[in-house]
Length: 440
Ligand code: UGA
Image (cartoon, rainbow, N blue to C red; front, side, top):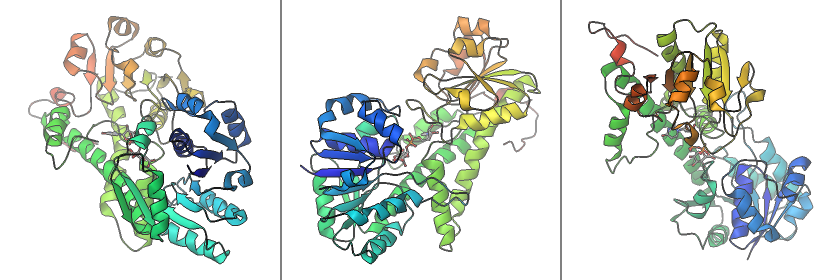
């Protein structure tokens, strides 16, 4: 069994560390935030990830948490880098946390392999290798092993991955990282470091492209009277296309897609290539969030003085992550229009969001509201179209930003219903003779 040091106790570091411990390895997770480490030592997980707390508790004897670099690197066979690489103002990835870790490796004795899990621009591995060599740390190996964990399903994604990508300068280092995953049943892609780094960016950019594509199809469906849910089903059954990431809605958010699409676009730009497709993917995503406002205005006219309930704040269900969440943009736009915004989320406490009133229950959020907007498809909202909610609202209008509800059943329950790209959602209100107009 290996000894693994992990730098970074965020989503990736905690999930990777806990899962490696569950595979029988000895793990030390190191983070720079003492409060986080203290909480973890007490068995408290600072993030919401289904199953993680239980898995950690079951493997507590094989995992330690520390702020001490020396403790993390002592005797380590592998040193995983799982620190954040947030976007800078320019849209490039901020690698300062990665470089801090590289500095800290100066104290390493022995010959561990540094494994890069953080998402980094192509060419980062090359630069880290040069920096290690310049410090005389030629005995340390370097492998790029990008993570493909999605929040909410991270444990399953680790234990049953679609693939394991290993990019190495030295094939023996790659072999050792591959061996670490021997008990997992997944295809392994072995390649050079640059290619491994690109796999991660390309995968996230491709998934984002699918979302923006189906969102544009949805927008056209609204104009021509088609139903994007049927369209996505019909398209997704083509085995060359597949059914995944074809859920139309109010756009993608989170700490990964927006950042990585932008980072790939900037990486291409910095290398002299204008990645036009990604510019469109980003723009479509921005506009998609704002379409909610137009849908509300269609029913309510001016939004000044109207009360709108935003149901769901997290960027997707089963996470407490608000980073780049569409809810933030929609809340800010509604406030700017002069609406009163109430919010509900089963996990996220919305008190940090400016200009909104967080409510503890759905019913409280919708009471007296002129509209309810489903922003996140939490399962708790599946039964939203009920008598109690209808009677509580000032106007029974639901804008379903995630196509969670059945339009016919919702209308039958006495609500006005607006989905995204659903048959009749916008089209039915157009006069028959109306000229088509461009809508965003
Ligand atoms: C994503 C990838 O799915 C992971 O493979 C990757 O490892 C991770 O980024 C990362 O780079 O760390 P995550 O951001 O947790 O994972 O969430 P996803 O489930 O991929 O959802 C991203 C966003 O796309 C959400 O806002 C979701 O609502 C939206 N989405 C997803 C859609 O609008 N439509 C879809 O069909 C699918």
